[in-house]
Length: 438
Ligand code: AMP
Ligand code: GLY
Image (cartoon, rainbow, N blue to C red):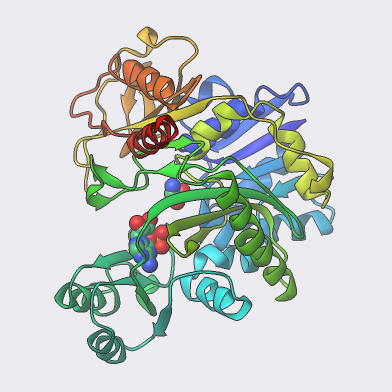
C-alpha cells in the first residue's frame, strides 16, 4: 500500500515510524513532513491545510490511504473533500482516515462539544456559553472564582484560561472576547467550573459505532517542572498512566467514549477516526475537559512505541466499520517521551541552531523529530518543540531513566526540557507499592 501522512510534527513522525513497520506498506509519503520523517518517507512540500495540493498529490502518486495528523485540516473539511473526490471517481480506491468536518466539530467548537455532552449526559464540567462579553462578566460575578474561560474555536491549544480569582476571569473575557487574542475563535466563550484531580488522555479508534481505546496516557502541558508556567502543545507524555486504572478506563469507555460516538451518530455526524478524550480524573469519576478529533501530540509518540501489532490493520478496520475484528496489542512495560524545546517556546523561539549528539543515542531509543530541518545537510532546529526522545522500559521507572539518559546526550543552543516527565506516575506507583507492603 501507498500511504500519505498529513502533517509534520512529532506525532506524524511517530505515525510514519509505526506504519513503516507494517509488512503491507510499500511506500510512505508525508506532507509536509520534517527532517526525521524524511528518513522514512518521501516528504512533499504541501501544507496540511492545502486541500487541493493534497488531492493532487494523492491522484498523482496513487495513494491508497491518507492519515491526517493535525486538527486544522480535519475541522476545515479535508476528509469531506477527499470523500467527495472519491465519489466523483477522482481518487480511485484511495481512502482517508479521520473524521468529517461535522464530526471534527467535537474539537473545532468547544460549545458544540459541551452542548453534545450536556444533551447526552456525558460527564463534564458544568458550563455556560456566552457570545456577549457583558453577559459573560456578569455570569462570572455571580459564579465567583476559580473558574475556567475557554474560547469556542481552535486556538492552537492556547484558548483556555484557568482563572484563580475573579480579576483573572474577567481579564480572560477581555483577552478572548474583546481583544480577540485568538481571532474568531473568541466570538463565543464557555465559562466552566474548575475541576480538581489528575489529568489523563484516553485515545480510541472509532468506526462510527464502536470504540477501541488505546492504553491511557498522560501529557504534561505546562512548560516548567511541577506543572508551572504557560501551557504548551505538550512537553512530554507517558503510557500507561497508572492514574487511569483498568476500572477507570472501563468507565471512560462506557460512560464517555461510547456514548459520545453514539451521540455523534444520532446527530447525523458519525465519527470515524481517533477520538481523544482529555480527562480530569475527579473524586466523582472521570470528566471530559476537551475532545480532540485526532491522535494526540505527544501522546502518540509513546503509544506508537508501545503498540506491538500493525497500526494499518487497526486503521483499516475502523474505516471498514469493523473494529470488532481487531484488538490492539501492546508491549509490556511503559514508554516515555521527553520533548526537547527551543529557547523561548511557547513564546517566540530560537530557530536554526545545529542539533548534535543524535548518534550517541542508544539504538532502541527513538528520537521523533517535531521542529527540525536540514540546512546544507546539517540538522537544525526549526520549530518550538524540536524533538521527542522516546524510550520504552520494563516499567515506568526504567523508561523514564532511559529517555532522560538519551536526552542528556543531545544538545542544541538554548535547549529546554522538563525533568519531571512521568513523575506523577512514579509517585502513584510508589504509593501503591507502599500500600501493598503495609
Ligand atoms: P483544554 O484545551 O480544554 O483541554 O484545556 C487545556 C488545559 O486547561 C487542560 O489540560 C487543563 O489543564 C485545563 N482545564 C481545562 N478545563 C478545565 C476545568 N474545567 N477545570 C480545570 N482545569 C481545566
Ligand atoms: N497533547 C495534547 C494534544 O494533542 O492536543
